[in-house]
Length: 324
Length: 236
Image 1 (cartoon, chains in turn green, purple):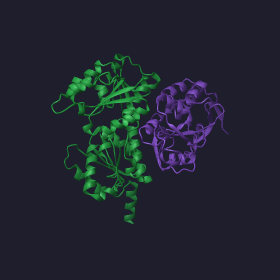
Image 2 (tube, rainbow over the protein chains, first blue to last red):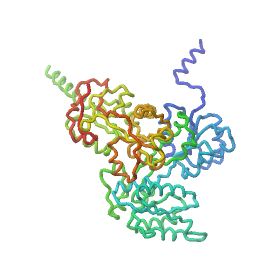
Image 3 (cartoon, each protein chain N blue to C red):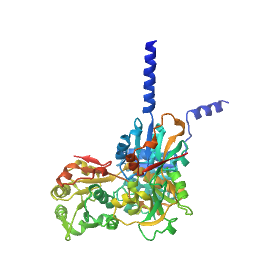
Image 4 (cartoon, each protein chain N blue to C red):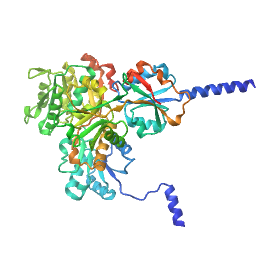
């Protein structure tokens, strides 16, 4: 009798014995990542139980702890929310083949299209970089400006060639020519990259007039020493807009006229749908691969717009943020 | 006695104002104009005076808001009533005499023909939630077993889905093609059309009762135009 009363009381208190969790979220301790994880929880918690493995960026034992967490929770799938989580998961798949039964979906990491081999690992993902296609077509629509040629500087050694090639093909369909300058080909050891970058940022290339510069999000090219002396200087001097995919670059500097960056709320839908298609529809991660982020937010820089005499179409501004 | 009468009149008057002010209308539709613009147009419509109007771009936002505080009326895609029974359609939106429309199924590469649709991924805007969208698609594209469905939350995102290779096909209501052409210069291939789908409807919440309903038959032509239509048909 006492046992039944106890069960009844525990039931009322919402007690659940320690159960395996369906989905394990591996993420670092960071405000933005935490908010994103909350959005994912909200989208998935109606159908799944979730747990989180949270690590500090400098925790050298994080991989072992993640493994222990997987053994404890026995998740059906994992969500990996940055490059470190992706790297740890890849090591664990290599060293513990039994984990190959546990698929994962990654996002919020950079260069995921190159880092994730969906044929080798049971991993799929959503790339965090906004594509050149989204950036340039949104700019053209908002400002109703003719855009025939767009300039982008990149480094082929940084394995970003595939993103450039994708963008070239996608923009070609939009009748926009992408003039991509490989900085690695123009420099060697001892070359001053500030000069190289500076000399390539110009308003005509190969006899073609450039209507916009796509600022590729590559830390190597945007290092502070190059940024001040080459990028920012040129953005203020040239009569063409610089388009960015990082909100902070637009907010904090007189640099980007227009920015497109991921909409986290919708990215959570895209990521959770990807995971659900693996768990519910039997679709393999290898069939999904790493796809582009689809839904974005936009921002404009008023001062630079005025300087370039650019006016957005008012009814298309919708939810575009305006910064002075 | 006089004091009590005054008090009663004041109470009745505040109650009736409150009752009117409490009526809420939600709009969740595929839109070609900005939600802010639509909200502005509807708020200036005399037939909706005293009605709190909110426009939603995303299905999830509409659902979440309805769950927190139910709406008395809503303008929604026609299948909504099949999946969520709390609403009853009272008017159908019309274009000319047409009360129905088709989705166009588009692809961007020649290899993705109608015959291969079962193998490909189909992108669509979420109108009823993930589970119901699967049922919806099997209703409006018959004899095809579409396994891979990719939903986006708004029409702004439907073409990029195709252009960036996240989906092999996308579906878009035929009246939104002009918006797509205004924004993009690519030439998508029209693979097929969906079955005929009824136009969106104005719904009244069943549990809300019929008293003090706004007269939707008097919706202004500006409001209808902003919604993407030009007339209304009263439903039995």
